[in-house]
Amino acid sequence: MRKPLFRKITIVGVGLLGGSIGMAVKKQNISQEVCGYFRDKKKIAAAKRQGAIDTGTNNFAGAVKHSDLIILCSPVEDIKAKLRELKRLGIAKTLITDVGSTKTEIIQAAKGLNFVGSHPLAGSEQSGVAYGRADLFEGSVCIVTPDQATDASVRAVCRLWKTLGSRVTILPARQHDVALAFTSHLPHAVAYALAAVMPDHCEQFAAGGLRDTTRIALSHPEVWSDIFLSNKDNVLKSLHAFERSLKRLKSAIAAQDRKALKKFLVCVRNKRQQILS
Image (cartoon, rainbow, N blue to C red; front, side):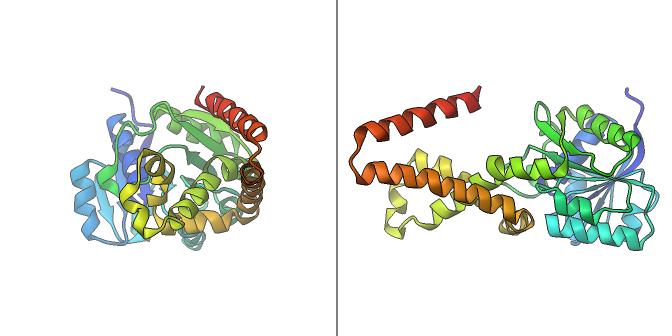
């Protein structure tokens, strides 16, 4: 059996991602103890039954005490708040990472801490520890944003994600936020907007296309409100680009220009096939 990399890991926010991390850490024997922090004490028993944690508490200071690694798995605004709390607690040396979907604001909030940003590109529209899986990160990409961190801390966080089964990519926080605005934040924004325009009387006729393209609109509103606002400028740029693309499609249809319409659809289909590969 592998020798544990850490003595104690604290997971703050044991939902889908935090729970899956805990389950994977325990499966891979990465830490001697996995402690979960919860606002709601009732959730501790459920997380233990799921095999996501060894111990749990709703006392934040107690949860992070004596930790070798703290993983922040809550919405972006709460991650920033927890980073401020860690500063107030004087947690300057403990290694800290997160799973936030935006990085620039989090990096700013983490100044003065031993922090390495992480964003595992895994998960689903579901939420809660009940949906956690020990294999969630296997074969997925995890972006690590090292901006202000030491080489030793970056290596430790990269090793963690690789041990969990992820392929690690290094990106500065600003580059991460630009890329994810197009590859993740825009698709979610479009899914929400598309679901919003569906007339009520049409719902009974919803087929696979509508279900597929709006599935991610089932994602947690609090999480995505934080993401859209914390990456506002990049999300707006991606939305403007989408509006221009939609305008091209609309113009070809309005003009009954079959040639232009077909050219647009063929180009987009080819691009989508490249994404699949």
